Amino acid sequence: MGTSYPLMRIPAVQAPPMIEEHLDAAERDALKARIKAQLQAQDAVLVAHYYTSAELQDLAEETGGCVSDSLEMARFGHAHAASTIVVAGVRFMGETAKILNPEKRVLMIDPAAECSLDLNCPADAFIPFCDAHPERTVVVYSNTSAAVKARADWVVTSGIAARIVCHLHERGEKILWAPDRHLGRYVQRVTGADMLLWEGSCVVHEAFRADALKQLMGQHPEAAVLVHPESPESVIALADVVGSTTQLIDAVRDLPNASFIVATDNGIFHKMKAAAPGKLILEAPTAGEGATCTSCAHCPWMAMNGLRKLAAVLETGAGEVRIDEAVRVQAVRSITRMLDFAAAERRRAA
Ligand code: 13P
Ligand code: SF4
Image (tube, rainbow, N blue to C red; front, side, top):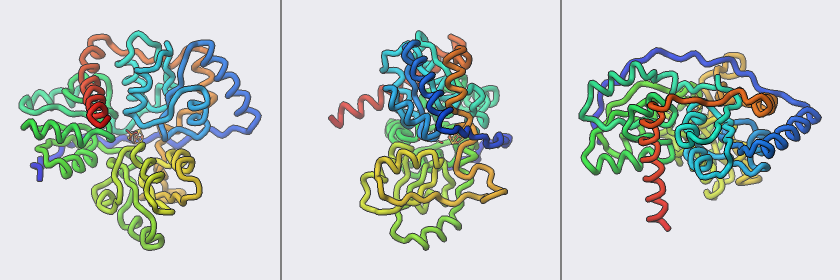
């Protein structure tokens, strides 16, 4: 087992109200035609996260872009030849694309789309915390600002976090981890590494509830339980599979079960249903239901992405991501380490 330390205390984040885009078929078709023409005219590629709307996910694929987890979004945008990358996701995803591709124009559908983990970890508090622990290797989750990545030794996504921390632990390194405490605890448990944890959390995943999940499991004893590691420890403890968004979709496709209970943002159901047509996908219960529901298993910042805003961003050039060059040069080192580690793993597996 790894060593536990007191968590860093940080102020809570208020999530914005959930405002989703609703379009009738005629408006949707007209917007899609405008967007496709603009993507082509501007040599642009659309890169979308699994938590965005089904319309955005389909459009990304129809136009030669990609729908994926945050690790693959970074890889895809970097490898693609387009001179403009349009990010359907949240701010850290747009910043990661810009950090890796300074020569490209990176547009965000809505630059105000934040992430509670990023907001939980302001650079002006995080940097002195790191400075106070110079003996530790600083590993930060990708859901952080460019300035926090610039202070880190490594950036990791949920899909690769445990493997990178395991590698560092085997080299005898002690870890300072930020910002997600649940993912940090999970990684600590599976690797046995010595980890000092920041106390951030995701407003969406933190709302999943173990007691209510147990009840639902009782009603569906045949269902496999799939959990994103940003969820509380008590929910992770009930999981058959813990993994990144892509790893959870793969589990729906590959496991023999006919039904699944899923503890992550329900935007992912679009791809899960496509990966395994006919299988039953159920939402894991959250803290609030109906009128009291704060997230209802959907990220309010991801919901800020929509076709209307995408058309406007392409037509006006608004929403361009800009990063201070000195910060970018620092941040690219820690992201590149992760991408190189992932590439080396793929080479070994080939
Ligand atoms: P993934 O890296 O698994 O796509 O997760 C990103 C995220 O924001 C989860 O809430
Ligand atoms: Fe951030 Fe949570 Fe939204 Fe993911 S689901 S982008 S971790 S707030």
